[in-house]
Image (cartoon, rainbow, N blue to C red; front, side):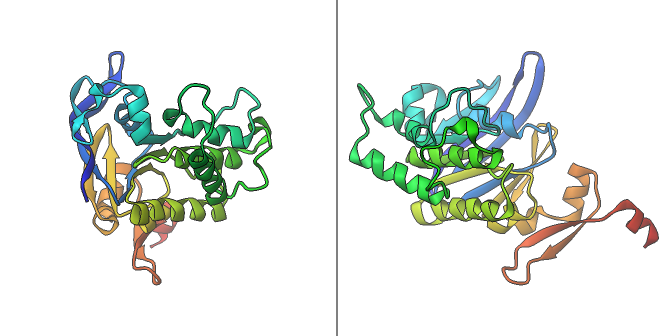
Length: 266
């Protein structure tokens, strides 16, 4: 698996507030990587740096082996698709129109969709369970439906790298599973490099090839889910006591919280 992203000792923040400190990681094609950690630890800031929306104050970001700063915005958009944390539609575009926006980096002139554009949009609508909603205005959708539209737009973009910030927020259990299944399939079958920020300590270790554990603006640990999800690591980062068990069907770890009163009884 070749490296799509290489991040070397970056620091970044907002004004005088430093959020990321000396962060290094890589993202390879063909793998699904989960970024986990408590609120405010720098996960979303990391994605902003990786997409070029926030310039680091130190360190280097390489995209496909070249400095990210050397790319135009159009070239970045042809290689990297992003699903942000929240969706706030302002205009009443239809679901199909929003998903079609994912094809904009590849179009010229009047943005007339090609047969390839139409094929990718149709596939993304189907993969994200949006068939039947294509003509609905997005400002009439639920939060979960909006999230699926955002994922569909990113998939229609047809990039080799996919960055997602809490893609299963607002989704019911069935659609959470469907999205993670889709991300895993894109990585494993289509050789896409997928990085997913997630608070879900059940689905992320079940589907991700590697986990990146962050705390206080730093990368604390990187490894397989079994290596990262330990009582010691989670107590140190989240400040809670947990039990780690293995899914009897897949062998992947999952987390059980320990209620303080139950711990006292024991």
